[in-house]
Length: 74
Image (cartoon, rainbow, N blue to C red; front, top):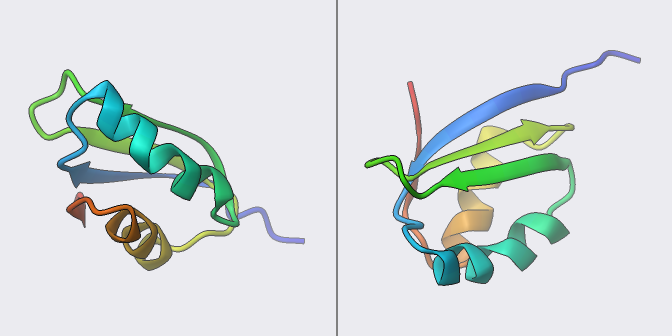
């Protein structure tokens, strides 16, 4: 079985602990996400997550469902 675990990073507008709390159930319930964290001290509010099969697009849709803006870091 191919191991395609990788770190994905996104710019978001998840900018405080209550925002992180709001997005937590969405990210925790999504299939294929390992550990994740949002660096709210970074100006661009970087979401870093370990993909265990989830695609970049699926992460974007999950965070948008929680009501936040997100874009991949190119």
